[in-house]
Length: 151
Image 1 (cartoon, rainbow, N blue to C red):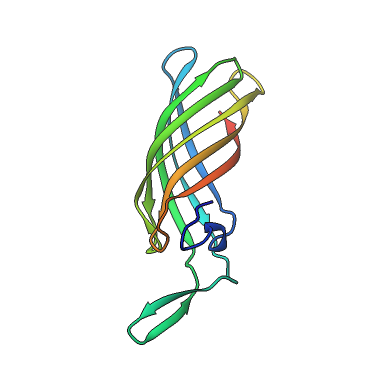
Image 2 (image 1 turned 45 degrees about the vertical axis):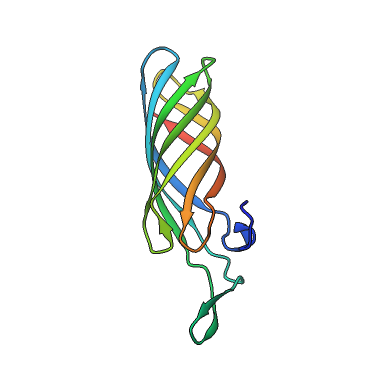
């Protein structure tokens, strides 16, 4: 949560939802290269209104819905056969006028539940920072949980 003269970001936006596709290529037995692209959506808090200064006085405005397309690359290190830590960096691309294309970075951890030699369930948690909104002076951060099917 970011604060300042604008107040907490949670006043403006609800919890987001999104999805991504991720490529993982082994560099050796424990270190893998990752690349991902996705889409994330943050709906506005419709009950929240803020005021904008205009030549004719102040007028009320609701925050717009926030969309972005994160594209990242990084490394995943398996410190056990099923457990890993990872880090990624990249850009969150502008989708609508409420967003700015911005540098983003993140780190996470998780574990793999194998079904057979080729398929598995990937469960993880990650922290990401850097998503920028035009009307808010600080980058957004997010803590996310993920469940993925690996094939």
